[in-house]
Image 1 (cartoon, rainbow, N blue to C red):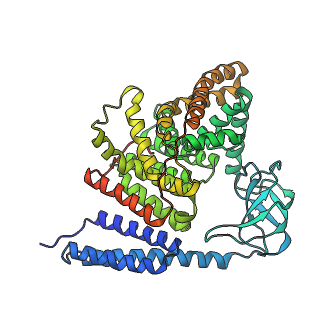
Image 2 (cartoon, rainbow, N blue to C red):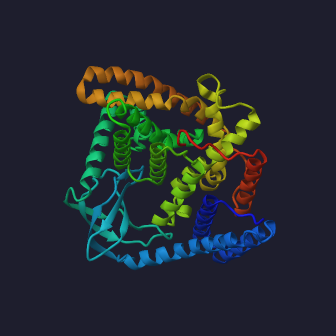
Length: 477
């Protein structure tokens, strides 16, 4: 009797290899795509004694299609772009995303107005005060992108505001609400506490001192101020619990989706936030139709959807790479680690510290090579720092929301809520700085493609040795 794959497994394999083709093409290994595709088909045919030759052919075509899509996408994008590269000129652009402050610049993402076309990254002076949706006149030299999928760059140009409110009105409205809430945080809390709360709640990097950024990097807690599935889950659960008290199941579902979309407009379209929002939406749909939520399928199909929108994201967007690797680590490494440590879901320990430890360890093991390769360091203290902090994040977000609501209603109530959330933020800042001071660099030679491939091969062997397929439902990492 011939053996064949389940259609769902076939679709999963095709999608995964399509992504592999995009990824390898993004690295510039063009011949390697064809070689791997043929090798994968040959190995599968031998293992299954030619019983899966149709599936093998599909898998080979999927990988080659991924590589072809990568090059076709950027060929079309290049054809649509019309910018005066290498020339100094004056032209108009509309700020298409929320300005991002840094120590040396204010980063503006803008779309060129006719007769030009394309997206540019503008490095404006840090003291500038530009807003989403403004039409500005820019005088400067346009530098071409430094990688496929990147944007053209203009350094410290002369900028003049021509008009306002040229963006999507709902996005502008939600950004203004967020900025008003962040201002309430700054009025009620010390500077570092207000910055940390803004980062935890909205992924905001406003008012972060360099000392605090360095401490979070050394302690492995930078992810706390990046919008992730953790934030998205809290929003989904809070919205669902609130609306189900007053509305039907269908209305609650629609309201939760609207709350999710509004939150996305508020925090912006960072890669990690979009990934988490898509997976949150899939979880809501699965619960609405009564189907079991497959984390494995959600990870791969979310990645495929985002790669279709921008193939360069798989190799050129560090936020996306770290977000997906950490999620995959939690899903696939978490259960084997629980089995190795011999504890179950009902034995999380005091304040669920065992669950936090396993989740943190799984995510850190998955992203460690990328962190070492990108930043040249990885601290063993990251696991302990996250164990002590993660359990306090939901309560911090709750009291932060109370502070925001009370801030618009009563100064005295805001003062009371500020004291409550301030205690937790002071504790979190102490943990961050304490473990940053104890940072112990991990001396691993993960600075080559071969070393990184060998490292992930060891993780795969560990996962298959302990026979786990990851969780199928629950909080989104």
